[in-house]
Image (cartoon, rainbow, N blue to C red; front, side, top):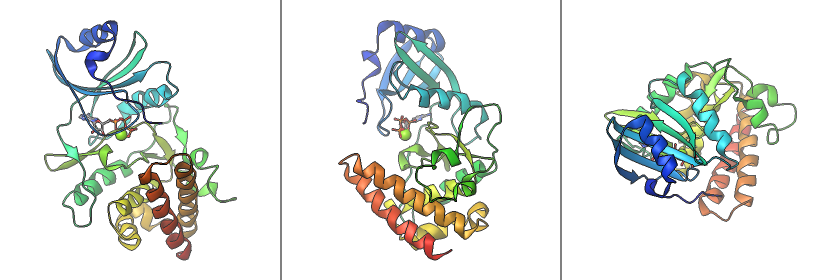
Length: 269
Ligand SMILES: Nc1ncnc2c1ncn2[C@@H]1O[C@H](COP(=O)(O)OP(=O)(O)OP(=O)(O)O)[C@@H](O)[C@H]1O
Ligand SMILES: [Mg+2]
């Protein structure tokens, strides 16, 4: 369920005071668009400069995702914004980030953003999952969706983002910057190019073109066809479940793309 987004000024006064203790006086707050899981997502103009603040009520069940995001922040590559602070105050859990003044990526075929997106993911592909941070294993995340006997394919040591919705990829100054680390995962590096390919399909790429894009990443290119087929089936099962739990049209669309994606990957085995 999406969390309704409120303005920064609607936060309890003690929460705003705790923010100002970190940033200096807050002069102006602008709510941003994109994303559905943060009750607060605002760019603040403060005494110490601009800060992006996202957060949710501390008792909300998704607060764990926010804690994971804070824990992984020090381990992220340069394409990701810097986390300045994490605070819990007066019933709210907030993260304060470096502001990225950008727009959401355009994944459409032929978009000039695509090489930038490729570069950002290529950078991430080289980053190992840190051993000392408690993040999910890919085999665990996909265990209810992958065909029997295939979970070992998902295991690996790469740090994965897994949620390449275009509003999690901000374009600015000739670079793509990857935000929203609610689902950091440890696993096989090819999983991220595969997750991105599905999002490209939703932006109008044929399944063949989306898979060609994934194939630009050595991790995907060198992966065992059976592993990719298992990922296709797991992805289709996951999006089927997501689309059955909600009437949102975009989820049904993603489920349809995922079926096509799975069929193509099954043929490649
Ligand atoms: N560092 C940043 N600087 C400026 N804007 C940002 C920054 N990080 C995120 N945003 C903007 O805020 C939106 C919401 O942030 P984010 O995606 O991190 O949280 P979310 O709402 O929980 O997302 P989701 O529902 O996708 O899980 C993004 O789609 C993006 O437009
Ligand atoms: Mg988001």
